[in-house]
Image (cartoon, rainbow, N blue to C red; front, side, top):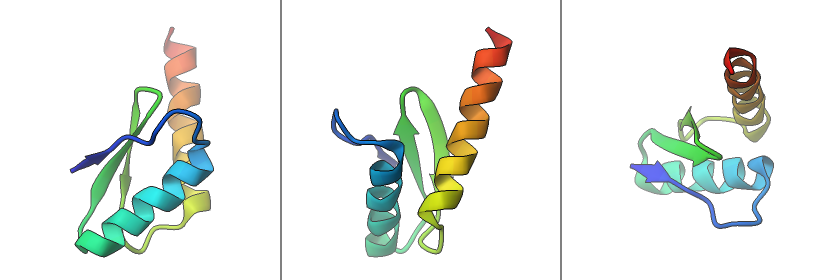
Length: 64
């Protein structure tokens, strides 16, 4: 399953919502934010998800 947050969400709010959905479904899901996908587990932490997103964003920017 892929979770795409509504417009206006920050990556932190999107991470919190994705973690909550993963907990409800009791399985790993993908968070898709600004074209970058991050795997989210029910035991993930929002700060870690944001950090991984930031790293992937930096890599994408450097590759451009």
